[in-house]
Length: 634
Image 1 (cartoon, helix red, strand yellow):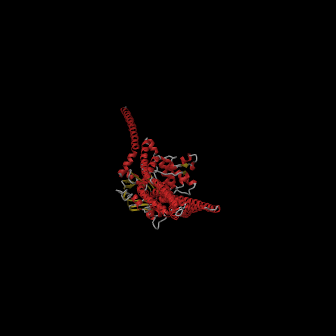
Image 2 (image 1 turned 30 degrees about the vertical axis):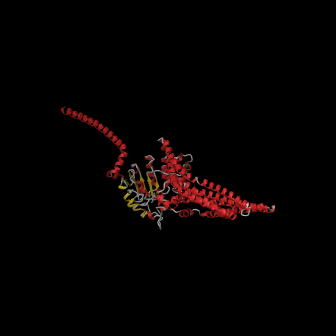
Image 3 (image 1 turned 90 degrees about the vertical axis):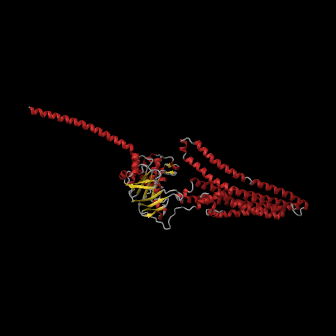
């Protein structure tokens, strides 16, 4: 059993109820009103058959119209009062259940926002979406049943049984016996289907994951003509879910037939023995009105029991949903603010003091090992290395997205664990390679960096990020609407907008995690030049695959397999570091060979010109010697 499954099974129903109960909040009054109105409705409904039986008996004995009219008025008043209680109960129940669902979604979403990356790693995105939607809807339906139908049905069974004994005497014992037998059957059914529903909800997560993966990668699917493969994969997941649901519903299908059978048995029993008692005792032991009331109470009891069985099914299905929601709500963030946090970052200096890091305790090796690094405030630092060398892992520790497993990470001379996390992250701006833009205008997206930024500041930041040129070509310019995920702009445009968004923060540390990979080298160079002029005091860390992106850095960090292989200037690394030199030569081989060819051609032309000039000089010297010889002879 996984840790997640273990957590779910360890939660008792009382713990689940207490955890979910915290989300009722402002709807407590409606949650209490609904059962109270339901109680009044049940009492009235149980009183009506008793009064009706008295009316039938009086009519059988002979009575006046005045008495019948009185009974009629009483019954009409009771019916209206029952209607009022039922409507009020329904309204209160709806408000309370929908309010609970809203609060649960809010509380789960707020909990997810507090999660650190390591917390989110323990849940899949699709699982969290399922909990916020399907699971919450299941709990809403269950709560609606709990505060209304689950109150009404037991009360009706109890009150109807009492009134049945009052009206029919010992004959009502049959109702109690049948109810107990049916209750035992329901418990047995629940014990069988509950494990099936646990499997079902885990498979819902996998089904949603398949859908999200396909939709997000639909361009790749179509380009490789893999639609049929994806459809088959989805059908397998959907078919697996179908078989589990079919198995559970096949067992739950026994509920209604059992109830119907019980109703038919009791109906036949009461009609036969009640009629026999009335006839043989000539109304002395039981009257027609009493038998009528007994039948009515019997039907009320069994219909309530049937309703209770349906409620039982709904609650059984929603129990796993409730546990899954609780798992999110009780999850404690791995990263928390200290008791007395620091709210000011002095400067952009960064120090890694013998830092090692692994993503989880079960990891086979350290993602970072023995990192000792010191960066001065305002420096431009390049980070380069092969795929899997932990370049991104290194910078994630700076803004405390993860905590170091060993050693300390310091920003501004202070351990990052001593800062208020919001303060620290506001001073460390990160631009990722896979940038995210949210639905809204370009201005809305850019103001994530600074919600109070003026239009002039936005335009200036975009000019520095080389984004203003293409924004101005849009018909709506900075009011252009960005679709969800930024699907209506190119990859390079997204990167430049995200860089502008980070610049608006004017942070003490700016980290570019291969965030200019989709722009050309000229634009990349212009962006880096803008950094030096716009935020000269900001420490700039540029993670790149291209050496050209870090060629003007003060120093370059060369990463290799989670360790720092070297830290030096670009020129020194080219002479002394094998990894950097190999990357540089691989990326610059073509241009280097071309330059060497140009140099070779130039030398050849120069040598030919020099040889020609030498010939001319030799020839000139020879003629001059001849002239001197002639003169001498003369």
